[in-house]
Image (tube, rainbow, N blue to C red; front, side):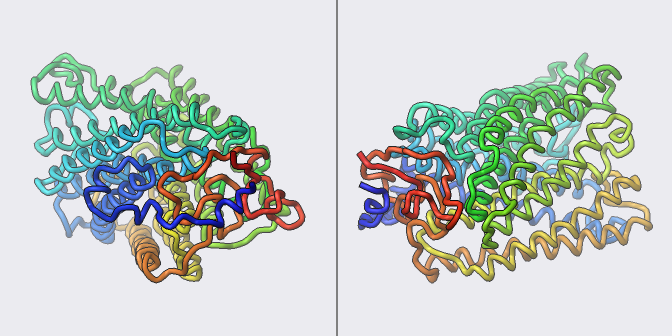
Amino acid sequence: MSAQATSAAEPQRNYLNADYGIKSWLLTTDHKRIGLMYLLTMTLFFFLGGAFAVAIRLELATPHGDLVESETYNKLFTMHGVIMIFFFLIPSIPAVLGNFLLPLMLGARDLAFPRLNLLTWYLFTIGGVFTLYAVVSGGVDTGWTFYTPYSSTYANTHVIATALGVFITGFSSILTGLNFIVTTHKMRAPGLTWFRLPLFVWAHYATSLIQILGTPVLATAILLVGIERLFGVGIFDPKLGGDPVLFQHLFWFYSHPAVYIMILPSMGVISELISTFARKRVFGYSFIAMSSLAIAILGFFVWGHHMFVSGQSVYAGVVFSLLSMLVAVPSAVKVFNWTATLYKGSIQFSTPMIYALGFLGLFTIGGLTGLFLATLAVDVHVHDTYFVVAHFHYIMVGGALMAYLGGLHFWWPKITGRMYPEFLGKISAVIIFLGFNLTFFPQFLLGYLGMPRRYHVYPDEFQVLNVLSSAGASILGLGYLIPMAYLVWSLKYGKRAPSNPWRASGLEWTTPSPPATFNFDRTPVVTTEAYHYSEELGAPRTGTDVREVEIV
């Protein structure tokens, strides 16, 4: 029996209306519901972190530091970084889209460890509560990197509460990665071989490896900061016989791979969007799949490029510089292959595709400027300037957040069973792209001209560029608010979504919208390769609106 025939007889109850009680949600083991709980929690954190960003840009609109004091400004950029990185960017795509979609893409009824999956959300939320306690109690001013010995000895703010929040949340990341790896190995549908997997799954598999191998190192570093701060043990403070550079090694051994925890899932999303809206199989599928693993592996060898001015030897600096150049190669493979996929494709400029194209432009700029920072002589000049801030945001916000919004719009009909206003979606995507560039491109110029990061008082000649950046931030903020408004509106008033509104390939599109509680009535059997579109019509070559699937 074809998959289309199966999905036509939609079940009367789905995961949303199976049980409306709050208790049923708080105790659920349904991966789809847990993904929605992550979505709600992280949306709150996103707008809280965004509020800190608004305060930062308002302060930097004038050169004299006339809005807040220096100590308050330190707290603003610290809390912005901590919340956005640890409570939004790192978990956003894996926890929301990965949780919701991975079992559906694999033809499974749920993740391998459903109760463990629920525990990850509770750990994430508990960690967030500790961090929110630090916010309402006066904040923390160490910077999101918690550099020692300031964080471990001298800071008079709520370092312990913030660090504890990050420490607890790290276990959520580790357990999520473990769950994804086991599910991918053990719960694939019959016929779904490794090289028939969606690239979204490959990306999350590589990300999970980093989560399991890297996050314990950060947890160790944070734990040692707490021990030195509470008990005065000499670990990082030179006055106590410690070594502050040791903390940088521990922190960046995790935190540079953490960049790929944020960006690899985004790359998986982009592969799905470009293939669907170009109506073509992804060019060089196996190369993109292997490049995800290459990024995950090479990412562990480049942490030292954050420490070119920290006293490490010139020889170590040269080695880390070369390795940093090397890790750019698999990222470039993805960009070139995505571009080749677009070539002669039957491109549809739907909202998710506009986000995908925006990702390509912004991520490319971020990646190329990363090569500048990997070059020893250039990095010495622009280290700790706004050039680094701009580069980081082009990767994380321009890349990860654009992909997150693109993926959210792409799978929103599947998640909710409702369509959103396509016109407003396209408008908001364009506004976000323009507002982002106006916000962060001037910061490349500011950094090159020598404006240091973390300063709220600056020379008058930098004001014009800072005003442009603050104006761009207001446009960017509007761009983020518009999707929130119409997506919430669509929950009640949006047109009901068919099972496959984009004519996409993939097992998730063979289920009703929204899916049933246990995803599939019977186990699907996959008989074709991934992204198997007709060259003539841009539809799946099976003659149905989904990838060819048999039901047994």
